[in-house]
Image (cartoon, rainbow, N blue to C red):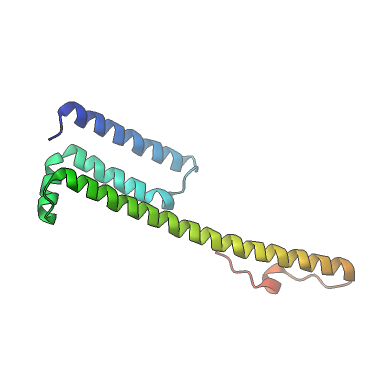
Length: 134
């Protein structure tokens, strides 16, 4: 199935990718919650690279004719999972940016009113705008 030379290259490449992602997490360039999917995929690929006969067993158990088809299927599934995680992240960030823009607009409006009054009592932003901590 896999030649020994290709298996070694594959294992070394996966380990280097794992170390690269872990280093980025350690340096705080990448958050752990966003990289968990990548770490899971790489660990799974490492197991498959070390024991390629397991891929045939998994393919047979799922009713897939060929291990190559199994690899394409898993790649498709992992791609969908990664796309879903990124979509959820973008949606959350979009909602937070919209809320932040609204708060800034209200604060600017309040500051403009305060400058024209000159004698209004200061109001805490948390009370006036009902800001909830995430």
